[in-house]
Image 1 (cartoon, rainbow, N blue to C red):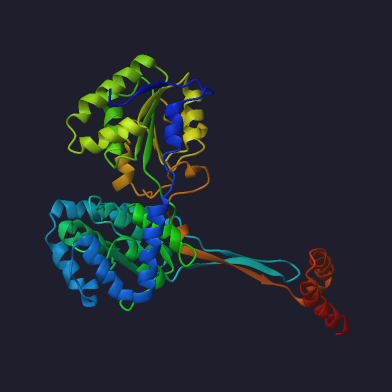
Image 2 (image 1 turned 45 degrees about the horizontal axis):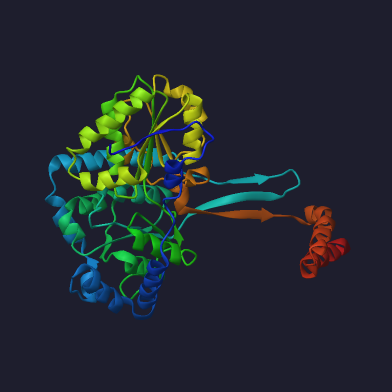
Length: 435
C-alpha cells in the first residue's frame, strides 16, 4: 500500500507521527555555506556575479542589460495566453483583492482628558521583492497571492525576480504580473536573486521585504538575509490533514491527499478518521488513483515517507492530533464541520465541508495560500496585508502629565541602573517646577 494505515490512541509513541513532525530539519551545512558564498559574491560584484550565476545554474549567457525584462515583453507574452486561462486568473485576482481589502489597518490615536496623546501609526513598507519560481514549480497563483496583499497595503514599489526563460516557459506568469500591475521584473532566480533584492546591484535596487516561494537554496538565502531585509516566513514543505467521517467519499479524500503529495517528495498528505475499515478504503483508493497520476513518482515518494491514514478513537481524538501536527491545511470532511472547527486551534487554513477542497483556497477563494508550515501554525499566520506594513507608536505628554508621572519613571530607570534615562526626566521636572 502506498500510504500506511496507522492506529493512534493519543499517547503511545508513534514512529510515523514522529517522522512527519521532524521532516523539516532546515538546510544542511553544505547548502548554508554555498548560499553564503553566493550572497557574498553578489554583494561584492553585483550584476557581474548575477550573470555568472545565470550561466552556472541556468545555462544562460547574459549581460547586465539582459537582467531587465521590458514591460513590452511582459505584454507580448501575456497577449498569447489562452483567453479562458486569462479570465480565470483575472477572476481569482479579483477574489484575492476583495478579501485582502478587509485586512487593511488604519491605526489609532487616543487623547486623554489631561491632553496625553497615544497611538499607533500604520504605514506600508516602501518596497517589496517578489520571488517567482520558474523551474518545475512555476505558479501564477503565487504571483497573485504575494503581490495583491502588498498592493492592498499600499506598497509603492513591487519588484519581481524570476529565473531566465521562466516567463517564456510559463507565459501565465507574465499574465499574472500584468494583472496585478507589477512591471519592474528581472530575469534572475535562485539564491543570487534573493541576494540582489536584499543588498542591491547596479541594475536592481534593494527592497525592504522579500516574499514568495522557492527551492531549498532560495529559502536558505531568505533565512540568511533576514535582518538586512524582512521576509515572509521560514517556509518548510507543504502539508494537508483531512479529517473525515463516513459521510465523506473515499475517492474525494484520496484525491485531496494526492493533490498535496504531488507537490514534492517532502510534502505530507495525512488523513485522520475513526473507522478502521474506512481508513483501509481510503488507502486503497489512494493506490488506485496514484496509478493514474502524471506526477505519480513524486507523489508515491511523498506518501512513502510522510503519508498516513491515522485511525483515532473519535472526533475529539482526531482534533487533538490535528493540533499536535499544527498543519498548513486542514480539511474537515464531516457531516457537521462547524462543530469540529472550534476544536482545531492550530492550522494555517481550514476548509469546511465536502465541497471545499484545498485547491479552492490555493487558487481562487480569496484568502491567502501562503500559509505557515511544519507546525508553525502554532504561532504564525497566513500572509496578508499586515505583512507589508510597519507600525509606529505615537506618544505625546504635556508638562502636567510629565510632572505627575515623572517620579515613577525616574524610580524605574534608577532601578535598572540607567541613570541617564532617569536624569532625562529629572531635568525636565526641575525646570517645570520653576515655571
